[in-house]
Image (tube, rainbow, N blue to C red):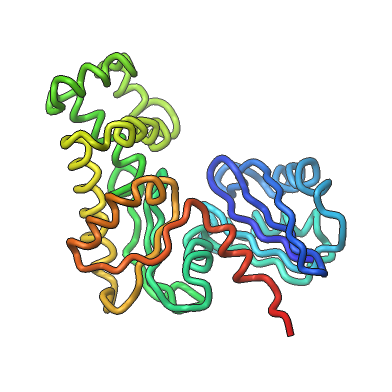
Length: 282
């Protein structure tokens, strides 16, 4: 039996492949070595995943946020091994590698994440061959939900938004400078806070102002990251994440301007990861 996981900040999508090739789904909370110990991870798995597993687990492939570097990966690995002690293979890797394998399978390509945050890599069909480092919410994350939300909030507060949009924004959120600065600098997870405002951009994406805001954000992501990867014109560029999925039409227009060929656009990589790890039939 094989377990496959795609873990984000809030939830983990699991796929369970039994010995006959049948696939089951399960969900748990997000499992991150930044916020949880091996013991708390094991407790969550015991309570909310183990009841869905009806056989002996031999292989586990876990892809998650924060799983970069030996010690963070070991925290998650120990939690998994405590619950599934019979597993002879327990691989823990980054969400970026999970996105690449889910999007590209066993073929080389460029994989990008556009969700709450953003990321990118050149993928050789098995591993990450190159990438332009992501600098996180405050210094980067161009094209992400957090970035779109930050742009639209700043435009509102600095009176750069057209009057009719500004009135809609004010009615919907009732924001002022003090509320925004408190959430930006004093409360945890400012990226999630600002990402919540990207919904306003999406709901008003037919307005020239918000359309251009989204278009410019995607163009900036492509220019700063994809176009710096070696021989990027030779590869299809694939995307995963809620922003890429729901802004698919605007993203494709921005890519066309840069001469970039877009391949797959998925909301999550779990279906592709299931295909990647599913045993090959004789």
